[in-house]
Image (cartoon, rainbow, N blue to C red; front, side, top):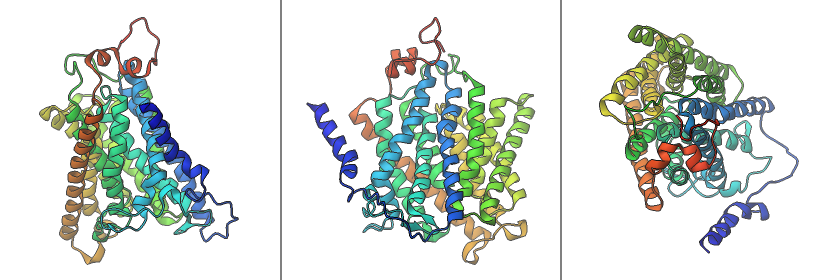
Length: 444
């Protein structure tokens, strides 16, 4: 009987907007649009490429770093983070972020629930509102997908789905609203052009908290846990590199000189990250690794995300290189010192990378270095204070809301699979299938 109640609930949540168009308005009126066709084409193309960042980019990037017995589990969690968050975004997330509400400084209203009131004629700036909704939905999916890398190889699938659903509403929705939807953070003019705090720092800290609460994988330090397929990670990393150009470039919501500069800075930042990590690894370990150069690229891309609209191209190279070296230090030192099991180094790459990039943004935004300068005539020190405030607030909110999300999830079901299932592998234990057919069940 309990299952019947769940089915009825899902029917009301997902099918009501379809059966009653007044709730989910899909107007067929011919457009007398007020938006730019050039900007629409550009952002639509960016949206398609950004989608490739998550699927299959991030999925392959993480999948290759898993052990062979867990690769399908990782791929499924990344895919699920996409589809569940897309559904929650369309039902309520978009409205709670971008509609006006009585608690406007912290969260939006219900005016766009189920995309109510949006038609093909609706516009946000020079874009159709449907396209703006789509593009911003992809930011939410990627943010949640990044967290998979911290909890990989040990989190129960049912717990993962419950956790991301809760986390989306108590973390991402208010964080995105406060920064982008007219909340209290927006007037501070923090220099974060493309989501360094809301996306990467937020996901990185969430990953750290989740990794600590879940505990270390059984056998860590004694069992071989190297990536099972670096070529898969390489392929995913390349897709992420390409997609990141659209991720940052589309944030101008227009095709103009600034939009192209965003893409150029992103490209250069990623290159700087790869070079910085490669040279540091070469010096420390005597040779560069394929996984290292790909990880350095991602670190550089994270670092340039907040800075891409405020700095000159050569500054982007420096930001990428310096960020990747900070991330490498975190992987080699911070993680080992505190002993947390962040499986795929989400905190070291996205958390440390976003914080480093956010601080370097202020340094390289100086006008004498070719940057845009600072809002409201602030001094570099004044802007740095605002930047630290924004970063600190993001860290605090992410840590608290992630803890609460996991604590609530733990009351519904255990967070981890049992020890036998973890030893056998989550592919077979959680999904009843394996990626590679071998003679040994549970082979690494």
